[in-house]
Amino acid sequence: MFARSVLKRSFSLLGGAQRAKLPDLPYGYGDLAPALTADILEIHHGKHHAKYVKDYNGVLEQFEAAASKGDHQTVADLGRHLRFHAGGHVNHSLYWENLAPANKEGGDLPAKDSELSKLVHQHFGNFEKFFLEFESVAAKIQGSGWGWLAYCPKTNTLSIEQSKDQSCVTSYGVRPLITVDVWEHAYYLQYKNERPAYLKKIWEVINWKTAERRLKEAKGHGKPKENEGRPV
Ligand code: MN3
Image (cartoon, rainbow, N blue to C red; front, side, top):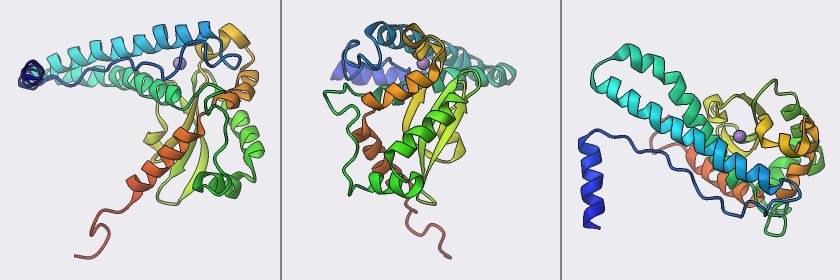
């Protein structure tokens, strides 16, 4: 405990921001088969996600060094790299968390009387229609990006969103409930260029429990703070 607090203090004395860390998957590499094979998971998590973490930490170090020297030009230049690699880390973490093996909650839809289920029915008609609409939107993302089921706390509405490269849907002012990686590395080894086939299969391993938890958190997030918006 003592060593850890000393370490923590020395970091803050150096002005060091917290480094990113590759999260462990909450399941084994082979556990999402047949929707996603073990080799896809192993490379996607162990190589691609790991590289975003490594690159984010590397750029962060340069960023801090430049900032501490007052080199604002370099800070400005590094900003977009920082955003890209941080986005890669955040988006992949969200993705792993909203997947689960089919024999452990993967694909199990929320209870009919749950808030999320009611919202899906209200916005899309039913889950089948939602799946089709999501597949269509995510299949059309040009190049690399992410498909999202998002929730807007202000309007209490769901939407299906696209984001390019490693940008996150939070930049649109909505909260992520489900995200699906549509970069080729997410499916190519198994589905080749058939992104729609990957999207059709992904529902078998979507963890709706995670989406329900995120909805709950988003609702908390959207609550006005005390006195907010009221005349003082
Ligand atoms: Mn990816």
